[in-house]
Image (spheres, rainbow, N blue to C red):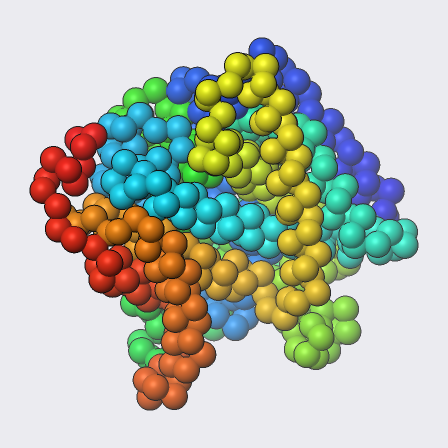
Length: 500
């Protein structure tokens, strides 16, 4: 694909987003920026959340890692279903009962000032890192397809990519994002279906033949791995998926902000049910796409692990590059166009939402923005939005210098350390009748990830070859829970939850 064509696609795509932003951000207020006036239709929220949840990681990394992980990722997906059930039945009723804008204000009411600030801080850290990882992926693809050929440095690619997000989100916030993410989710789903269909054409297979190819491939032979010591062990994946969902969705301001924009708790729960069902089907599509990519490479005699452009610094195949490489170098021009539009859609649907959630949390949890007049709130929102734009750029550049693993692993690896304290805090608040000494909570939440890191590094030696994978999040949350118990006391029920 020529750089001119890709740049034209990107420019046209963002023109559409900016038009949507202009039409939806007029007369924007803090309430519309943060929670869309609590008037969003549940079906719109459910559809928009698909793009936010998946990101470019799903579009590129999940199909790519089929080569090494087969369908073990499906264990995580089944865990997601259990996690969303907990969110819909436990967390959403709590958030609606307390009428929250930022979900971390619950921690202040339950534990105190320092617990509240600690929870909000760990969200900002977690979401900033996660969003940066996802943007790193799409910036890398754009660099490969366009800007490297034009001699443009990666830092410039990153800066321009994120500034474009800033341009269409800084005014309208969540109210705008619900519309742009609906458009982007639709674009992403159409692109993945079209991509599978185009691979079928390349292999001279109809839809029935594609299904049969996926079913008979050794790469999709099983998702149930029964070796407890393996990172692919099903129940390990299931538990990790469940707790990843509870923390990265239910305890995350980004996705909960969308749920809190629904008109009622019942609408939010309907949104969660249909979103969950759709998400499972979409992930199956991406895993199927991965199988078909490697089947295509095999039929065409492509030795992917021998191509220099697909190798990482260690000289092994970088599976994140497989789909971009095949789509833009071996498929038809139309397939390449579809791929570019798909990855842009799914990545920016996730990134714009994350940027708005970071702005919301900082404004509400640290600046206490509601105490100011609306005109002052507007300037504070926009300055905070710009500041987090810069933060994301810096994190991406640091990550590029350090990264040596595929992005889907990197995202969940970071989440295991940064979301663990949130899991421990909320579990302690919801399932005990104790109150920790508030001043000790930040120390507990810092020590827990450190101890988790020590455990992960030494698990093989200490636990007879057991490898800790994504489930490190559970151990991290458990250590936080134990630490909170150690610095807590039992309190009477009325004092325990004064807002009940």
